[in-house]
Every structure is written in structure tokens, then in C-alpha cells.
Amino acid sequence: MGRQTQRLRRIADQIQRELSEIIRLELKDPRVGMITLTEVEVSTDLAHAKVFFTMLGDAQALALAESGLSHAAGFLRSVLAKRISTHNVPELHFVHDASVERGVYLSQLIDDAVSGRQR
Image (cartoon, rainbow, N blue to C red; front, side):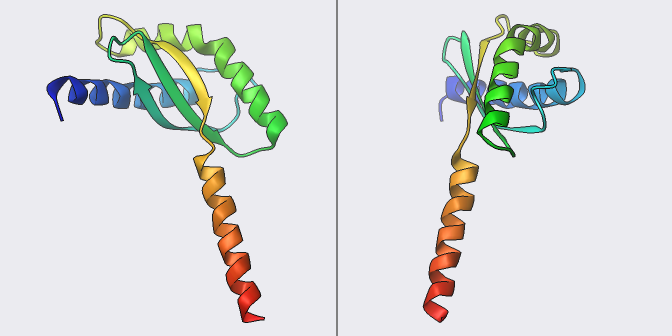
């Protein structure tokens, strides 16, 4: 891994840790419930960061959370700027990470298939 790649990974990890804390402690938007940040991808120029999140709930709760996070992106970015030591703080883009739900669904399918064979 190159030095630039390692630097971007460190920055992404720091953004993930700080944002998790900011969202948990400082974000007062009721649309954003209990979410978990699963990953942050930072562009090489540090202009943009994709923030992947998961949450429990139905499609309506997910839509509300996405709306709340998008609405709060500017606030989150400004609080983040005070906590990280980069010249530029990336613009935040929130993306629902469906991999956890997919994993649970596939696990249930496998369990159903195995229990079906045993009947």
C-alpha cells in the first residue's frame, strides 16, 4: 500500500470515528435514529467522503434517516472540521449500506434450506 493510500485510510478511519461520536452525541435530528457507520471512503483530493451506514427499521425509517443525514451534512462537516487536522474537510455523502441486511437475509435463506432438508 502506498503512502497516499495509507494516509487516505487513516483520514477515513478518523472521519468514521469522529462522525459516529458527533451523530451519537450532538445531532438532535429525530429522523436520524440509531445508525451505525460501517465505512468511509475518501476521494484522493479529500473533496468528498462517502459515509456508509446501516440501521434497523423499515423503508420509511431508512428514508427519514437518509433525509436527516443529508440535511445535517453541513452541520456534521463543520463540527468535524474542528476535530480533524486536515486542510480540507470533505463534503459528506451518506449512503445506506445494505450489506448487513443482505447478509442476514442470505443467512435466513440458508437456515431455511437446511431445516427444509431435515424434514
